[in-house]
Amino acid sequence: MMKEFVMNPMPKVYFGKGALKQALEAEMPKVGPNVMLAYGGGSIKKNGIYDEVMNLLQAAGKNVVEFTGIMANPTYAKVQEGARIARERQVDFILAVGGGSVIDCCKVVSAQAKMEEDLWEAEFVKHVFPTQFIPMGAVTTASGTGSEMNSGAVITNEETHQKNGMGGALSSFAVLDPTYTLTVSMSQVISGAFDTFSHAMETYFGQPAENNVSDEVNEAIMRNTIHNIWKAIADPQDVEARSELMWDSAMAENGILKLGKVTDFQAHMIEHQLGAYTDCNHGQGLAVIHPRLYRHIYQNGLEKFKRYAVEVWKIDPTGMSDDEVALAGIEALEKFISEIGLPTTLSQMGITDVDMLKKVADSTILTAGCCKKLSHEEIFEILKECL
Ligand code: NZQ
Ligand code: ZN
Image (cartoon, rainbow, N blue to C red; front, side):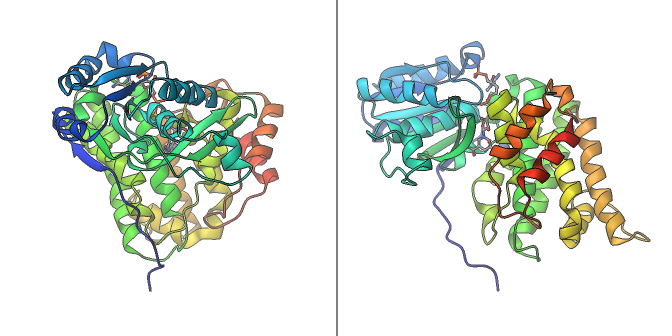
């Protein structure tokens, strides 16, 4: 029998060209007058999304409070800045307009603004999670993380050198207009899409490993992501490919692939700590870590790695041993990473400090493991192999 599960609610999704207008006209009458418009380093001012949002908010009669400069890999200090503004300006609703970083930052701002206590301390020391939030909505301008679809947020605490997943607000609605992603640099499109692929793999290799509907849907998402990364590279203006990647991203993190599964996310835990120490790009870090991690563990999950090779990478297993088939899948992943222009070593990302990698390994959260639970020592070995 399938493993029992509880399916959480998802934000209402407005998808497609023109979705922002449709969404804000429908949703803004439901919220209070003071709206915080949150965004990053200014890409939305260059590509016109800022003007579009501002016009719609003004047409809806809102008092707009801006919260800007949310950096990639948002910091806990930035969260505190946002929470301060939200309290001082009595914000009724937060509209996050950006990639995963902006959306994540707002999810935690939304919680911290309603809570006197320091949220980091509450979540990681007292294990108390927020229950009250300023309502929010998300407008995704760069896809990959799927952050708009869930309540998890990844925040860097620069003081403690930790990049942790925090519990935050779930958006009441998400706007996914693929045309908004056409101005994203190709290197970010690729690293974002690889992040999606990583989310799918980290879920697929979780338990149980046997056949189930979630894994079959997952295989389709993985194949579709690979196909559309190639299409987007071949034609950067291919909005069809951007649409598919945007929905792949949402599907990988809206909970559907995780139904009935215990997910792994060990590669993510390693990458997050690497990010805490180096501020590296998330998708690029994952691209370097995944193949080495899988070479370490595949023999403990041979059946699933074989299935992955055959179903995702179309390896013909005829005449091959189980070990050869599984390894051929990992080799196909490595070849793909290299051919789409992602880094294959940490050195290529400018990361060469072995002492720092030891700190990364020692501070990495250990997960249940998809097929093998790792130790901090093994993670250090993996990271050294990544150099
Ligand atoms: O800041 P601006 O100027 O907007 O520029 C951004 C940023 O430099 C730019 N960008 C975004 N939309 C654009 C655009 N440039 C041109 N045109 C547009 N339409 O893209 C750059 C990267 O943005 P960012 O939001 O940092 O990227 P991404 O969406 O990959 O998010 C990465 C963050 O999300 C976390 C990562 O760890 C990282 O901190 N993650 C969040 C997850 C979640 N909440 O579910 C899951 C993930 O595993 C991940 O850990
Ligand atoms: Zn990710």
